[in-house]
Amino acid sequence: FKQRRAELIAEIAASLDQVNANINALNRSIETVITVGEGFANVEGLWSNFVDVMAKKPEQNTEGED
Image (cartoon, rainbow, N blue to C red; front, side):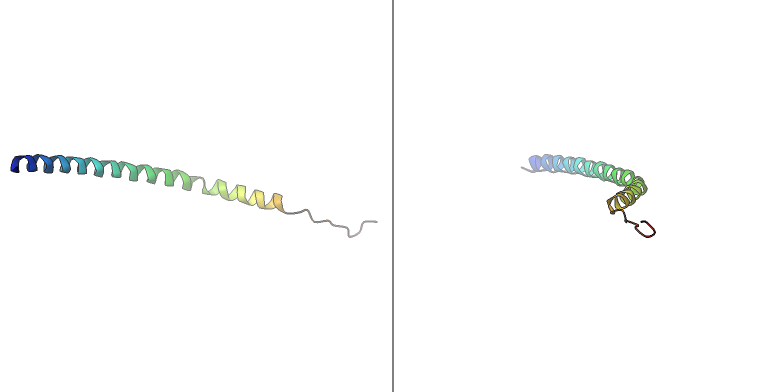
């Protein structure tokens, strides 16, 4: 019983180490995605301004026209 328990504990410890390594890799990947996304913030701002300008209705200037 004690030998089997020790084997299971070792297996669980190895599995937890693997889970920890995978979580760290996932965290690094998420940080990379966030960094890349932040790089596009200026471009997104420019496009938002462009869309806002294009969405405005042109003002009709009739002053001085006959």
